[in-house]
Image (tube, rainbow, N blue to C red; front, side, top):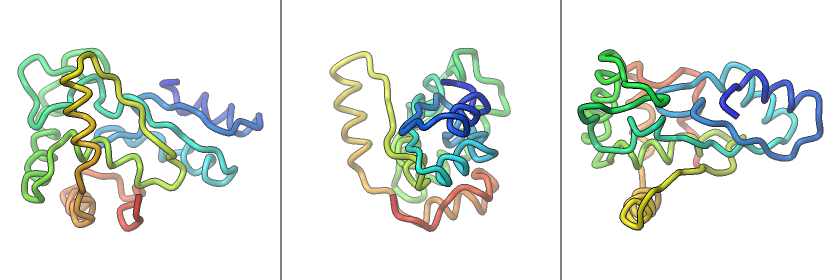
Length: 158
């Protein structure tokens, strides 16, 4: 589901074991930190973070012309933010897709990620990116640059 508020209600009012959240706990969108992730952690509910590339904006090393966020053209401020994220990633020898897949997994309530792929080539690229190591310092540097919410766990192992 795309709406963290509705999932939060589901977690509070049922005995769900796992929920799938689409695009709301990514490098660009931290809204799941408001209520959903804390409630899931409290109740022992696992989260599958889907759409970690936010409709493709985080699927490449740098945003390209026509890049999309939430299925719409990305606005200039968002493109600038992704370029700033890419600068920090590059300083650590990491690509944006590597960081995009690794980031949600740092939260203790997130049990896994779900990544859509359209071709065998995308499967190969995403598998390699997922398997690559991401230095722990990347997360604190992203936070220091104001690119990660202060509540996002950066000091825990995935």
